[in-house]
Image 1 (cartoon, rainbow, N blue to C red):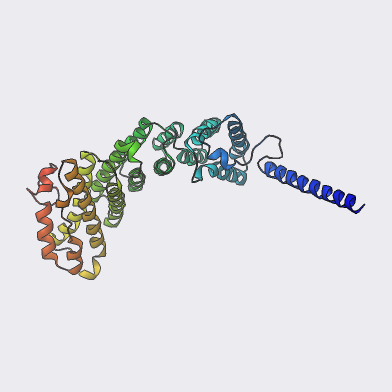
Image 2 (image 1 turned 135 degrees about the vertical axis):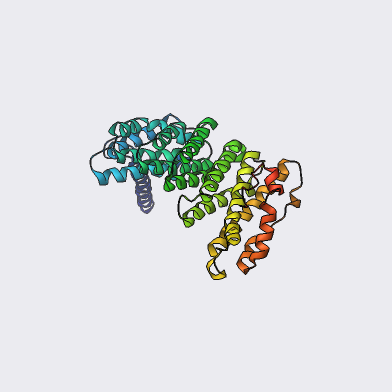
Length: 380
């Protein structure tokens, strides 16, 4: 009897344990399903990270988008905001796959159409917010449309989402074609060339800075174009009087940092055009301080921190750009000299700074002649 009782107890315990496991599994599944049967409210990592999205996963994605998309275009602002957060969540996974992003982009098609038909600023910004995370052909078209908007705020936000697209592509791989990427980069160039809005130019420069980190294996030309356009835009602003010097310096520092990092990390050659633009920006950054020394307007040592930082960043960019130039022309990069202009300026040795910088950047110098700059490009 004891043995029989023990067996009954064990049987009940096993059944209880199995039932508990089944209930737990059921609860986990219910966590992915809304009260309305079949509506997926969260996507499992296996779907977001899938190398190839299958039929059942596609159904999950469609259900998920339908559930949250309906709320994202609703009249309840708090619910719409929460829905947008939920729609973005799957794409910020560090392991989101190219296949998922393409499938997700397709599933979002109807929602994008709803945003477009609404026509209000909030819907436009919501579409751009999603588009920047996707990095697909469809999302690129949405961002291009935003950059053509009549609203200044929308254009600036769209430029930021272009930068996000570059970051997504660099981190998670390309889910768009090289032509899509080229169209986006070209649009940023035309926008920055055709406006006097400093905030918009700065947004374009920052976006292109993210493009400088695109994988060179897949997008070497696009990466080089980002360097070229970004450096040209920042250099043009730096040498103009269109805004206060502080804002122009910040823009040039942003561009020089991105270009320097890209030239330093690139495992393959850049292009002659990109290198020339990087050289031009670096030289312009040095020439700003040089002009102040020549004109006698350079602040005293304790007040020239901005100039010292500008020159240090400029000569670092110049160094790596000249190394790349040497390698592109079949020469050893070891012959490129690392200057110390910022140290001279920081120490108050303005005379040595002036003489050395003018020798490097003045009429007839190798930089001017090798890159076909005008004789008075950097030393006026």
